[in-house]
Image (tube, rainbow, N blue to C red; front, side, top):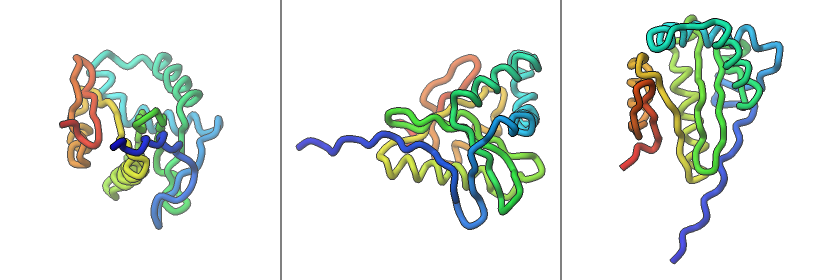
Length: 165
């Protein structure tokens, strides 16, 4: 007996995540505040790994915003972070999820991640991402959410949900 064909991963779109959280599509005008949150979250781990080059990081982030669907996370009417998700054939590739320092501790990132996992589950797929090896606290966050390490390189842990094996 053949199993039903797997659905393509759904694209992430603007709208409600839960009673408090929602997403809106990022616009060109969002680049500076989103890059500021990106820098705030990733400067230390990137600097520890390869050194922070502001011009290179800006160019890379601008490239990502141009090719990866990017959404601003809102808690009520306040913008508190962003998420970049690339739907692939059988997984949602989570490129970045960044929550502003002043909004952390409210489980916003965990709720956005759980919403993405539910979307992937409904489509019969998973979620894939990578974490800088110099950012072990973030690895712990994803491990608590059920992600498993698929492979390691000198720079990254590659994680999958559901966990492999």
